[in-house]
Length: 357
Ligand code: ATP
Image 1 (cartoon, rainbow, N blue to C red):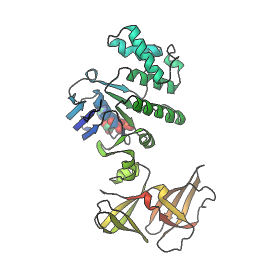
Image 2 (image 1 turned 180 degrees about the vertical axis):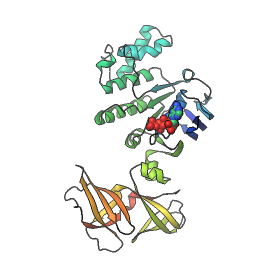
Image 3 (image 1 turned 90 degrees about the horizontal axis):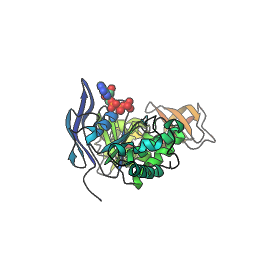
Image 4 (image 1 turned 60 degrees about the vertical axis):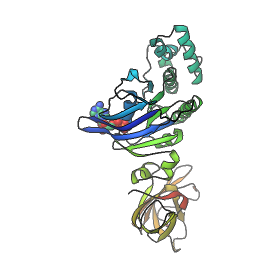
């Protein structure tokens, strides 16, 4: 049933631990049937935010609503949410079936009915036939799927994931993350997902709430965050941008003329008045040109050239402005050797003026 009301709403939520403010006046809405990631560096407050939704922590000030109901003062057991932890937290002495049906049995469901519903969810996560195994007889990825089945079997209003993939190796991480996303979409679940891995967040999310130092740094779709960072922190965090001091020479509602060293760029305006500004240049926006003498180009020397299999990474010392650029290129043969003097310009589609800083 479609509904406009948010599945989760934070209204000016603050959480303090003594002198530490872990979450500082945070507000957001999470739409039903969406997957929203809380992303940010270590210590930014994302786990605390998740635990506040779960009711495992209580707010210092502010309100939390789940499905339009004020749950601020309710305990974890009184909120209709389930959490999947980093460590899976499976009961080690119970087999897979017992683990998945445990919550239903605790709610008073009969053994047969609980087993039927548990079997259905185990089949959804691709683990039919594993019912009798102990957790110790499963791989990390399988244990994670049991943890997911155990959470969704309770059909909570909101499913919470705390770094669910951090114990898995890189290949499995990609597969399990796709499975979680597939399940969320097939069953129209509302999921809030904590990670510090920006690629994982970009891959699975409808929306990403990026936190920095206990506050929301930006809240938007993966494309918004990557293409339209509103501040320096986001530009740097989402995609390793080079941040350059530039001069906006002129601007109107739609476009801005920007000077960076000898380069003159006409680019989409983002509300910057003429004067100093900041330009974010993605590593793959840096074009390395053999002809360094052409006018309207920056010049530089390649000081580091690294072969990464499917692409090259370069560090290039530019003379005007005096900066070092980090650049990537899909052209691995021939590569540009260290010490080579090169001309530089930027792919206009992959650079963006920063709005706020
Ligand atoms: P990580 O990625 O490292 O898990 P995080 O973004 O999830 O980090 P939180 O665990 O939410 O960060 O912590 C936010 C801040 O609150 C940190 O400075 C942390 O030290 C502090 N903090 C968290 N829990 C407690 C607690 N129980 N008592 C005191 N301080 C805490």
